[in-house]
Image (cartoon, one colour):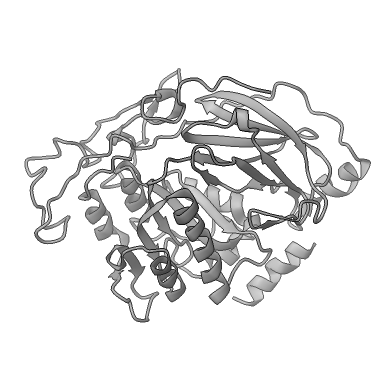
Length: 413
C-alpha cells in the first residue's frame, strides 16, 4: 500500500550450459548482431516494418542503406560535405556501423515445467489477489570477468504488494530463441540481503549471481525470471561489454517526452506521455551507427515495465534502462546525485565511454559534465532548459538532430 500512497504523493507534488561460440558478437547472427542498415528507418519514418523475420529468427535487410539513408551508396553526395545534415565544413558519412546491435526478435520462451504450488497459502490469498504482476528487473552492464549479478523485483497490483519467499527460476537467452536455465532462487523478505550494489532489499527481491564457471561471454542477453507459482515473469537485460563501449545517454521526462511530469502520470497510465517529434528516429540512427543507447531516468522502478512498453510502442531502439530504486523516485539535487553515481560507476568500473548525452535540466547538464562528457557533445532541449548552457548545445527539436546524427561516422566497437 505504501507504494500506492507514494504514487499519490508524487501526483500531489507535481547447472552448467553450453553458450556456444561467443553469443552476442557480430559474427554470431543468431545472437542478433547482424549489421543491417535497412532494419532501422534511420533518416525518416517510412511506416514500414523494421525488418522481415526469417523462420530461423534471422533478420532480412529491407532496402539496406537506401531508405535508411545510411548505406555506402546513399546518393551521389555520399561521403561529401552535406550542409543540410552536418555542421559546416564537416563530411557527412551516412554509413551504418558494422557492429550495429540488432537484438533477437521475440524471445520464443516456453517453460519446461508446469506451474507449481505456492510455498505459502498467504501468497494466493493476500498477494496475487492484489492485481496484475508488476515484476521488473534492473538492466545489468558488466565487463568480461566481472560478477554478473541479476536483480529482480516481484510484486502485484497497484499497491505493489511484495511477493515473498516464493520460488523463481532464472533463465537467459543465450542465442535467438535458445534459453538456458541458470538457477533457482527465492524472493526475499524485507531487509534480508541488506543493500546490494546500491539496491536496498525492500522485500520481493531476487539477487542472483551467475556462478563464476557459468558466466556469459561478451554479448547482450535477455534475462527472464519466472515465478513458478503462476509463471509470471520479470524481463530485463544482461549486457557484457568490453571496456571502451561507446554510449549515448538520455534523460526521459521533458527530454524525450514533452512534459517534465510525464514520469508521474506513467505510474497510472503508461501510454500517456507524448514523444517529441523525431526523437525515436534520432536514437534509432545512433543505434545504427553502432552506439549503445542508455535511458537514465529519475522515475521510480515500479514504472519500469510501463516505461519499457512506451519506448517499444513508440519505435525507439532497444536500449538499456536505469530507474531509481526509491519508491518516490528522485528529485532535484537527489536526482543529480543518483544519476551521477550511476554513470560514474559505468565510466570508472565498466570503462563505458559516454559519447553523447541529452537532457532538459541543469541537473542533467551537471551530471554529464561531472562524468567527463565533452560539453559540445551535450544536447539540451530548448524551451525546457533556461540556465547557462556551459558550452553545451541547445536543440529546438529532434528532426534536425536526426539529420546531424545520420552524418556521424560509424562506430567500430
